[in-house]
Image 1 (cartoon, rainbow, N blue to C red):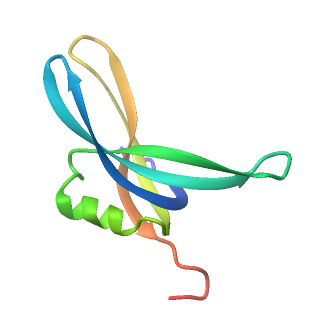
Image 2 (image 1 turned 180 degrees about the horizontal axis):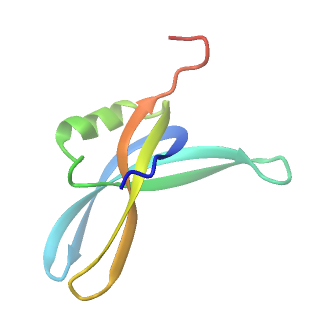
Length: 108
């Protein structure tokens, strides 16, 4: 289900993480986006958001595209996925559906 949610911020890039679960090795890919906002004291705070890249989007071409946007202002769209594992545990996560560079207004 595509929820149409997006995050605007500076692209930090795509990373891979090796994980082992139940004796099986797996590579997970994530995308980092840094956002800036002002707190109640007027001080700017940076936050890093980490979104999962699903197995349907982790081909080399897509990962290279995400990394080519590193340091640029982007809008990242994502969807929330959830389900139940074989052992009955429930899971959910936010998975990237795309990213596009934001151009300043008046620039093409």
